[in-house]
Amino acid sequence: ALTRTLGLRPRHHRDKPVFAVWLGNDDQATATLNAARVPTYPTEAEAVRGFQHLVRYREAQSALMETPPSLPQDFSVDTARARALVEAALANGQGWLDPLATHELLKAYGIPSAPVMHARDAHEAMDLAQPLLERGATVALKILSPDIPHKSEVDGVRLNLATLPAVQSAAKAILARARQLRPDARIDGLLVQPTIVRPKAREIIVGIADDATFGPVIVVGRGGTAVEVINDKALALPPLDLRLAHELIGQTRASRILKAYGDVPAADERALALALVKLAQLAADIPEVRTLDINPLLVDSKGILALDARVAVAASRILHKGRGHPRFAVFPYPKEWERTIELSDGGRAFVRPVRPEDDALFRAFFARVSDEDLRLRFFQSVKHFSHEFIARLTQLDYARSIALVALEPRSGEMLGAVRLHADADYHRGEYGILIRSDLKGHGIGWRLMAIMIEYAKWLGLDVVEGQVLRENSTMLAMCQSLGFKTRLDPDDPTVMMVTLPVQQVEVPDVPPVA
Image (cartoon, rainbow, N blue to C red):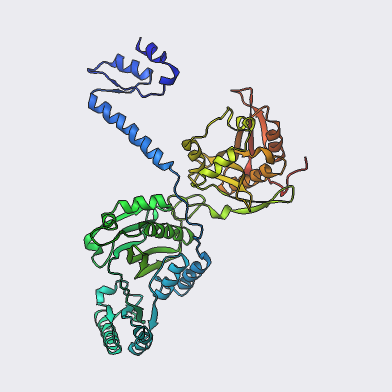
């Protein structure tokens, strides 16, 4: 009776969760409830805990589907310059970038850092300090040694030096003490910097750590000389967007001091979050950067400024099987699949992987796709595109999924998209494609399919397959021109199964003439 009653529930009620609490040990009752797909609990408390698991799962799924804010339009990095710095250090057998190269590396990724100059001895330190002193600034001196990453260990820092005699005395004292405490260390001289005075700035540590299992990890926390004593840090796997970066900052106790208090204005938390996103991008672009510490990173209402940083480099090693980034546990945006294609009418389109922030792009695209084309693509009429629906199209696990969009170069309008999702064994992949209804016949779909097949080969898949409505003659013809084999779906006579042995076919550069 119970099974029949549950089966007769109205359709709009069947998706509502039903929990049962059956007191006593009754195997028959439990079996009946299991057959009706109703979870059973021995007590009310355990039923509530079970329900809370569903609530937390739904909250986590909703958070993952949030559209993160995109980076500013002027955000750009000089990857070539940064890579050249790292490769030069590795070629010279260095395990650490020198401070001058570190300053240039941060500059290449748009992270402001204090200017730095190199003095070989006390006399050169005085020469470099003189222009700063004449402008009314004070000077900071720091020991420069590849074997002394923590300068405070040898008392290797002097701040607020206001005269040339003070610079000379401090320089000699720093060099002498470093040689006394670390006679084995290579001493390259001194770093000369203007003393940075930002009295209401907070000292934060940010960086890239190296985990033996998960690879690069982004770090943020309370900085300064007492960083190890305070031990206030939070970690996250890259890549990061701004939403994830803000959440990471919020996991630290240091996030509280970023707020306004007393006569201290609130710090620019967004600038700090953006710095974390940039470090995640650096870790993606240059796997040879093994660790990077910026401590302290000054953060105040004016923005951020790196006062001291160190970067360890080493040859990259692969941490996992398969394609993609050699060291990331979570694959970053696959920028290498960006390209420009030529269309049948002589026009051009820019093709790139889908990004999480493409929600608005997809909405505008769907508005220009006919109801009939939507039905052919999704096998049913689609009248409303919820945020969750579009998030499933834009929030991708790049390790097993790829979605490529074709964009009009000038307007940025979306012309079409193709998707590929691989199984867990990287044996088969399922594709889907949709082109704007007013752009059929321009070769967009054929070229997107060709790039998708190229990606499937690169990923190591054996077969790409898809389902096409039997009435969709245009799609079936295109599949046949690309080498797909077609057969009737044994479970649905209205659907054709199309399969392609991707490693055995060569796709021509241009589509056949219709």
